[in-house]
Image (cartoon, rainbow, N blue to C red):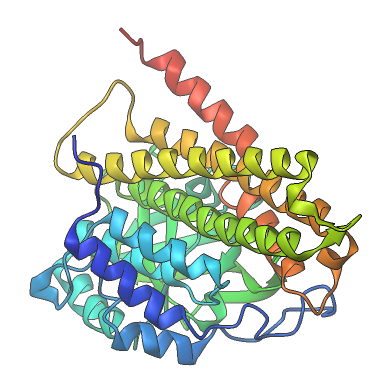
Length: 380
């Protein structure tokens, strides 16, 4: 077996590192000092740089002007983005573009993908349902009326919705089928109410009251929404890994310089053991992430496993949620009071980590889902 990344995937990482090199994690007001959102919009200059570096078209097919890469490449780029707390809808945008490319009608693909690849159209996805606990597709109903569909319901905590042009909204038809509607942010009957994430970013609660979309803007392919949800969860694991790696590096640098009793605190056994435990967490987060991303790509090619790919995604999200929480808590502990200083970036990473821990379900929710999968699939 060859576990190395391809030349194309490695090139994507190098391009991402170059784009993110000058991004400051504290480029907006601190969420600890801001009563509302830290900013009205995402980082548009950074978005333009990502577009210019062809990273927004990374997962689009070559015939659509993209690089034709896969979920692994996307996760590699997301990992670099999280190291600097990049305030861009890279995950939601690229994941939604992949869904449109794979399952959307030719009319929908032609309308969205060229602009998505250039960054002139911004895509996001509503994946949390009404409360963040119930399946998102149950929060909205979709009923066919002639050549159009009508959507009614609510979706909460939609990331970057205020700055997006199109929103992917999962819904159910009342017949046990999940569909995925691509809705313009300015659609009649769609309203957005402000919400604020743990990380201080501006979210939106979507209310859909008789929103009508043409049939070509609705994806009815079985499994399309489930695959998008799994890709969003896997990308969240990549963000957690990149964030955790940078936090551990910050902790290593700090404890290597901070002295007590005439010695760097990093040389104390209690400090070294805690840091080593967190390193093990990160390696477990990494291996389960690549397993999940590989299964998503392999599933497209027809490869299977003892469990559906949802099982690998659940394992990755369990490790990501638990691991990133332990990493930032240990970092705060080893930094002492300095870690809570709002002039130092660690408190921002802590806030982002808590958001990623709970995003698309905490560890307990994925443990329950994994248990259901194990009960339904007998393992040899």
